[in-house]
Image 1: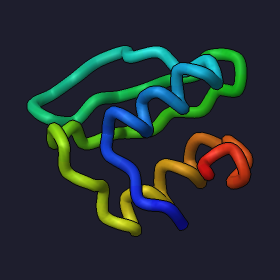
Image 2 (image 1 turned 60 degrees about the horizontal axis):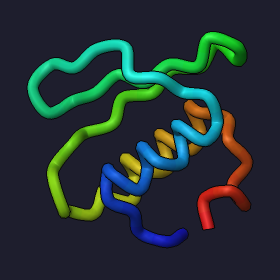
Image 3 (image 1 turned 180 degrees about the vertical axis):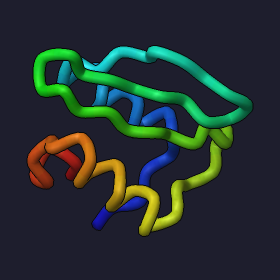
Amino acid sequence: MKHFTSQEVVSILKKHGFILVSQKGSHQKWRNYDSKKQVIVPDHKGKQLPEGTLRSIVKGSAIPEEDWK
């Protein structure tokens, strides 16, 4: 899987109807009210997200994996 920064992940989430509902420290909570899905995105400016974190976001968002390429 390609590596992403938090800004790239947020861009994809927005395209799929996710909106920012809260933030605590560097962790942002994104929710899609239509699909009832929610993901937490750590916002560490400019750093790539760890692979496990990215996989958790992909799985939790239910956005097809091909949209993450």
